[in-house]
Image 1 (cartoon, one colour):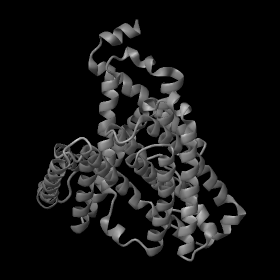
Image 2 (cartoon, rainbow, N blue to C red):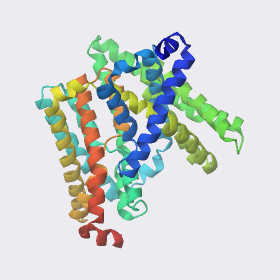
Image 3 (cartoon, rainbow, N blue to C red):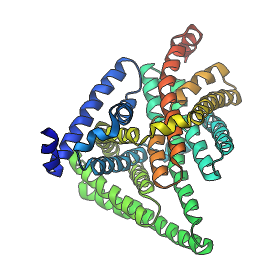
Image 4 (tube, rainbow, N blue to C red):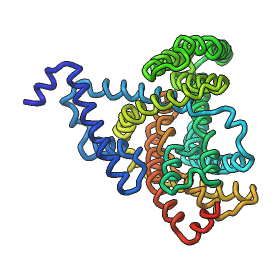
Length: 414
């Protein structure tokens, strides 16, 4: 009877029902994970996996527009989360990164990247797919690292600063490299000379657009909002800039994800230049609340549902190999980074575990890469497996190490 009622009901009823189910499940899953000291970001992903594997996707057949609702909200969520990422990127801060952080970031990134690239090539995948896997293994889930450091009360200590600084470049690098790979792969099916001429023209157009938005559109919109706008006015003004930049980027074939990330970076740059700390703080607060409180759960549930469980187990060795390489590469890279900085290798081992989690931005990136046909489903599933395992084990091992006698004295001194 309930099924028939929902089938005959309006799109709005289906929408409210689906959101009620997913938001409620997310709320309780996060509470549970917090109690057992696991990253709460995994809650929605586990929900998606449970729906996919234990409950089955067909369970939601009583909601006819299930796919449309879920994919629409997920794509919008990715746009907002990339916009938020851009808002958190301080180009001045990146420029002023310490020497130790730069060396650490280089070593902790390049070693797992190299290992991932050659391992994927060995499994028979092409150079673009191997490059993408290498990138996914090289970066760090900033959100997870931050939660690990907060729980250990290390955010304001020297080691905490080093860890956060070392991971700050990875997210930007990954999103832009996906765009480059997508452009290169598109060129394979076109006349090379004509295609690259078209790309050059689009790049010039995009550059002009970015300049216009940064120096004309953004200042005009902020001037219209006044010196101390209310939060809802800030949100509305920033959404105008976000969707204008995102739409333009998509029309110029650079992809909506580049536009979303660029709009956040441009707004942040303008706010820092004009020292508008009030607006900067409140914009990030509003977007963060909407993104993490509503859209992020939908995105991660969608990712979990998108995973082909049978494909994961049919190619499980690839996922296991990537997980081992990702972990060994990140830890060894961090130890080498500390060695080159003339710091303790033992401390580098601890830093490596803090940087090892990957269950955040790269999950959005692989959805984008899958949609752009950069990677096949086997690689998609293997990276999800790697991200899930590293995000589960890293906080546990880091916490054990921090509480051990071997590290407690060293951390207290810092």
